[in-house]
Image (cartoon, rainbow, N blue to C red; front, side, top):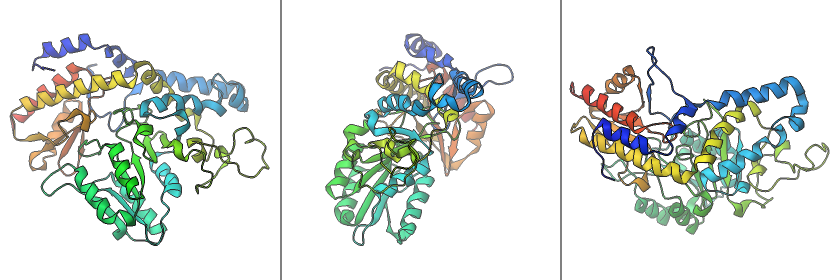
Length: 422
């Protein structure tokens, strides 16, 4: 669309926004004068849904009044609590309910999934990740290699062309063509945490599978942000946290996806616990292990209900809005921010995130000249909440569930004033 660099235009877009009211279903931090912060770090920690406390209190009340009977007789029986979340989460990530479960935390889940999907042999044992993967992913695969008796030299990196910031699919194809016969696992961050680049999962799955590799996705920066269509993509597995765009609270639980093609494969090696045992006989304590089908078959322990309650509060909004409408607003909102950045006319900052909306989510990564972190601090001093990632990027993520076009306009207007001193 044709944007205009005026506050009036931003307010007009807000007045036409059918999702604008959802902003008021979140707690927005305020300064001492009661003014809302300009909050653009939903890619790191989403804001708190106002219903989160209410939903936690429901479970606290059932615990107080019913004790252990809350597992079966509570307002939301704890034994089946995760199942309703799976149905809503599946829609967010483009999966079938059978393929999704919420459990544990992100890096732990990646390890649990690699128990099943990283099965090295003497001839096929290497792991491929992007060169600037999120550190936790790199640490996880390095430790997996060591655990299986291999070395960090067996980790292959998909890197950008020299002098560029973004990865190119042709380079991945070349790596797989040359070394695919040695690669057991391709594990890619679905949206790169640093550049904000979104990858074509379907293409990556096709390339990896053609060479006999298992393909997994870390969807931490994608869930609730892009429409990953995990089932249709054909990737073997994925995992993501829920505390970024899914607004579940600091350090909260993770979601996993295991493709339907693996749903009934009881021969897949995995860790076991009583919660991935057949739910029909789970409480008959003396039976041999009988693994459940689908993603539920990767659970180990009973669900932490107090941590799940805020996820429910958030997912209900995603259920109401739908990812189509959310993504439509996101493209428009991020596009407006991009337009305003381009209007700055300053060589002190530049966008390294792809310009094409299909190759990004709502995050824009702003590269700062001379890696000057003081620019980020000046924004923070104005209660403009972004985050800094070394060596030289400010990450800004206008989250469509609660950010407004006026937020975006004000943020870039203040940045413009700050840049006058640069």
